[in-house]
Every structure is written in C-alpha cells, then in structure tokens.
Length: 242
Image (tube, rainbow, N blue to C red; front, side):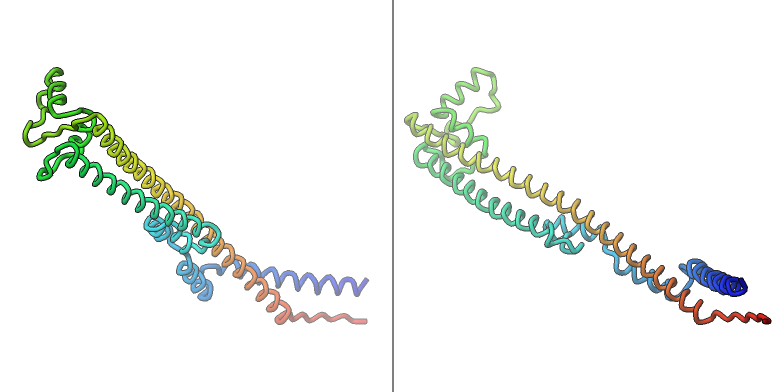
C-alpha cells in the first residue's frame, strides 16, 4: 500500500509539471521570439493570389506554375493556348488571303476602280447585284437615297452571273474565316478565365498547407520541449520512515 502511494505521488507530480509546461508553450504563442520569426517566414513563404491572376491572364498555365501545380493542370492549359494561337494565326492568314483574292477578282472581273479604297459594305454590296445600276435602282425604289453609289467612282459590272457568284463565294469564305477568328478569341479568353480560377484555388490551397505545417511544427516543438524539461527538471524529495 505504501509503495502504491509513493507511485501515485510521483506520477501526479510528473503530470502536473508536464501539463504546466504545455500550457506555458501555448500561452507564449506569438510572444516567443522564435515564434515571431516563424510567423514572419510563413508570410514570406506564402504566394500572392494577385500574382497568380496576372500570370494566368497573360499566359494560361503560368499561374499554376507559380502555385506549383503546373504539371498536374497548368501544362494542359498552356498547350491549349498554343493550339488556339496557331489556329488564330492560320485562320487570320487565310482570311487575309481570301480578302486579297476577292478584291483582285472584283478589279479584274467586275471593273472595280483599282485606284480607290472601298469599305467592307461596298464589297458586300457588289456581290449581291450584277452592276451599280441595278443597285442604285433598287435603293431609289426604296427611298434609300443616302446609300446610292457614285456611278463613276464606285462603278462595277460583273458582265455575267457566273462572275458575280464566283466573287460572292470568295467573299463568303473570307467572312466565315473572320467569324471563326471570333470563336478562337472567345476560346482563348475562356482558357484564361479557367486558368485564373484554377491558379487562385491552387495558391489558396498552397497557403493553407503552409499554415497547417507551421502550426503542427509549433505544437510538436513545444510538446517535445515541455516533456523534456519535465523529465529533466522534476525534483521530488519523498521521505518514508520504515
């Protein structure tokens, strides 16, 4: 019975001192110089959401590269951007080529004045009417006098219906190419938007992981220190008279 009493006293003293050390460790959080340094290091190690947004807006995938998730998701967005860019360059070149073709065709087959520069509306109109007289007659009939073309400066005449249709097909092909360019630009914008959202999520997850690791390291540090101090500094003097 006496030995049990002695054992209980020793254990109680050890637990009380250890618990005191642990409580002290948590109380000094934010006050201890080492903890302050760790907090400052944590702030420095954190990544900026604004930087991730800017990088993804400039080039999809770069925000993920900054956040450390390029291999898992960012590289696919960068590859998609490269494909869109190649598609845009190709379609834009094709559209420019088609525009040059139908303008040259209008000059050689339709008698369009090569010394004048015309609007896009003009090149659209000449593909729908056989000559300038037919166009002006139609506009006059409908009272659209402001849309009449000058018979000398704006002259055209296709001569045959086949010439007009051939020109019209060339003009339509160029318009389709221009419309496709808009779709490509839209896809590039959506790719950037998705990259921005993904990069922000990656940065937030990264910063949270830093906070968790830092918090766990702090607790482990002071738990170990508390237990070590407890065992090293525990001094009990117990006398028992047999």
